[in-house]
Length: 302
Ligand SMILES: Cc1ncc(COP(=O)(O)O)c(C=O)c1O
Image (cartoon, rainbow, N blue to C red):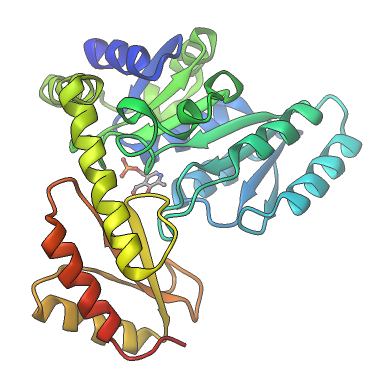
């Protein structure tokens, strides 16, 4: 995985990168390696299961703030600093949330992180390939890469391969090589995957890759306009609420030629079942308009 981790660090413009067998393994190994029992982890309520499991495994004290709620994040930070002025406080969040498609308010989170001497772990799974020049992610787009201690990601989404990675300072990745159990005690991704991952990163870094990303944004903008929503990422949730109605809607879409999964509890909170639309650069404008047409004809939402 040597070539792909070097390519990843170059692409993300970080000092170093480390590859894991999956994004799940990256989170599960990294979070416990960075904090100890007396430390505090503060997570967004909508964080992915891999982040929650990594946080639980660490044995640190956990605090959860309502999704993107900066006031509650601040009060958790105050509490954590008061509890132990020397503790490591790790804020864990995502760039783009997997079931909502919205973004974390990164500049504000970075400010709070600095005010309280905390560290920031950012899962860029749904931002890479989509946000920032050459798909480098939200931290890059906001010019905040240097403020994010741990940039995590997966190769399994926009990059079309499989495997996970951590980007950041070299002393951090070297620490992980020696401390992250899911790295040490699990087989490394095989050479074929490493080669495919490197090809994907090289493509994204190229002018052709950037053109394809622009095409994806053209599609995101078309659908957002058709559905009268704010474009934020390639994930577009259409919240219906009722689970049965959502399943019926997904079947209706499938009958019209659109594969849009119905997402229900426990993946999302009860009463917030939704259609989860994922856009790609390969979609045609006519397809998106007809998808929007079918969605708009669905029975009214809750
Ligand atoms: C936000 C987020 N983080 C992490 C992961 C885990 O990545 P992987 O599928 O590579 O284990 C996923 C994917 O399912 C995800 O959506």
